[in-house]
Amino acid sequence: MSEEHPRRKRLLLLVSPNTYRAGAFLDAARTLDVEVVRGIDVPRELNDWWDVPLAVDFTDVAGATQAIQAYAAQTPLDAIVAVDDSATILATKAAAALGLPHNPLEAAEAARDKGIMRALFAGHGVPSPVFRRFALTANPADIAAQVDFPCVVKPLRLSGSRGVIRADNPAELETAFYRLKRLLLADGNPEDSTDILVEDFIPGFEVALEGLLTGDGLRVLALFDKPDPLDGPFFEETIYVTPSRLPEATQAAIADCAARAAAAIGLRDGPIHAELRVNERGPWMLEIAGRSIGGLCSTILQFGTGMCLEELLLRHTLGFDVPSFDRASGAAGAMMIPIPRSGLLKAVSGIEAASAVPHIEGIEITAKVGGPIVALPEGSSYLGFIFSHAADPATAEQALREAHSLLHFEIKPTLQVLQSVGG
Ligand code: ADP
Ligand code: CA
Figure 1: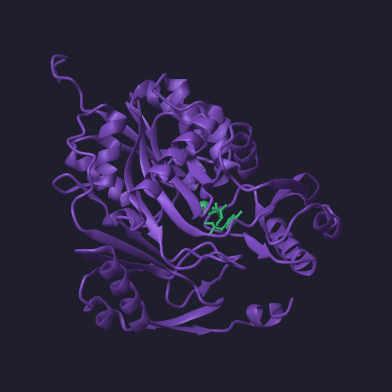
Figure 2 (figure 1 turned 180 degrees about the vertical axis):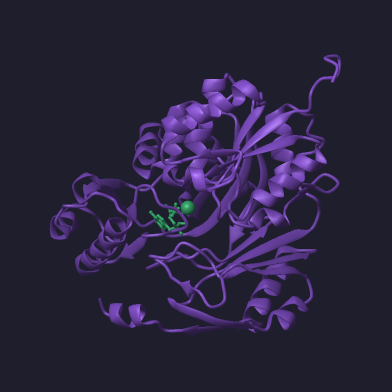
């Protein structure tokens, strides 16, 4: 090839083997005629067994950064995109090592650690819950004496509401504490060097903001209402609907709060996914992440004349023109189908009837029939997703509810579940 032709842009996509979202980014890259190298999270011990061009162990950030550097020395990379939370720190470090634009490493670390994030929010006056950090070795009775009720017990570094539990009194706090402790120990966290957070429960209505930080500040790409009450004791995600039905002024206050939260932790470029609660005192930051929305929810977002979220983000990251930041007209909804109880998923029925509900665009059952499923607060997945499009948000929401009511999941208790009942 002659040097006069600029080479195609090449993107490193960091994906874990079980991500839902790689496909959307691969499609977007194809549309943009961008070459994609997949950096797949493979534990170092299994490296030789997996035939992947670039195997990186997300838990070994230094080693993985080196592997990416060595790869890029042969095969130049123009951008690095983390598809999931688990790779955001690696993506930042590797981009820094390659001299590509990136967020400060501290920002990537704060976005992954709820304790650091809370401290930075508080230090910068971003409205957020009062929080305290405790060791896993602490005595819950001592914790109860130091916090207000209702409170929320949560891990520092998990996601998808895993281990997040509301407690209304000292007895509930003790139960929640030990339940979270069991989960963290089972995940392999060392008992003597793991902390948790206990924070004030913020009542209110929850929203999620999908945005893009550019040199001009925060652009809101979509604001989602979460119309199902999230009052605990566990906090399963269910319905997301956009556009928001909140008053304009409230939406503006939410965007302002999210922009301040991003600045507080040092995020300044690229996608953000923020979660907030809104009550009579205004918006409160729960969380902000330096990545786009997870799961399959981005499926429902379209911009300009049919550009998907992933294409918009890749265009931004690669310095291509972004023809529009405006969401296509109409309303859209997604439902993450929660796991009602743990057990063995025996069968799923009603998909055809549910798909036939007006305004339903698609149903995706992601749980494996025949496999075990684990409910919150220990679980980390959904049964699947339902997507809807309609002229207005209320109709998009109602369609999701109706479709969900037509789905039937046969769940058989397993021995393990029976043994842990009451435990
Ligand atoms: P994760 O990273 O696992 O999603 P979050 O901190 O976002 O953890 O908590 C998950 C959910 O729990 C939130 O979306 C919210 O519904 C609820 N939640 C968490 N913290 C609070 C709080 N302080 N007050 C009220 N609800 C909370
Ligand atoms: Ca969250």
